[in-house]
Image (tube, rainbow, N blue to C red; front, side):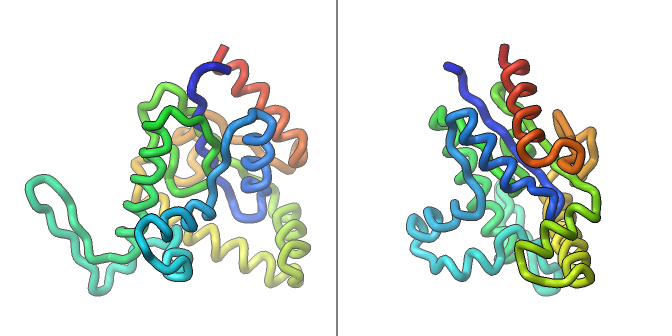
Amino acid sequence: MDRQILIAVGREFGSGGHEIGKRLAKNLGINFYDRKMLDELAEKKNIRIEFLEKYDEEPRKFFGARSVDVRTKSYSNSIEEIIADMQSEYIKEKADSGESFVIVGRCAEEVLKGREGLVSVFILGDMPDKIERTRLKFGIDEKDAELKIKRHDRTRKKYHNAHADGKWGDSRTYDICINSSRLGIDGTVEMLKKYIEAYFE
């Protein structure tokens, strides 16, 4: 495809959304961005990567945090918000360059809203499948896997809803929502690839 393609992927924890996004980018022959963008940000801003990772996709801690509106610009002393803003600017710069890419999380569908080449996707899954995927990936039992899924999804929901107009996981927020438990990882990638190709024809 000659035109710019921007794929924003939201996902439930354990749904395989990260892997689906990565494979989709490979199949489409475009770049893939996830939390590894923090490496480039750390180098560019001269900030320790461990610091960025600690606050990556974390909702703002309201206690002691302030925002100040100065000449229509909003300034915050919240570390979480500052890092979220840094990532948003990074995403916008990549899009402004004309580059095509798939990006996972970081409210990308909101950051890139209004751009002609944007397709937003949300990946969900059945809890038993998410538990099994999480259990195997982290070497934990089913109970801990379920707790981990619920904890991460609560954090993602809070983060997303604090930085976006649309609600996390709400089908009206995205162009397409798909349950990866129905077709599996490979089948979901193939279906999304066909959808995107049809979308741009």
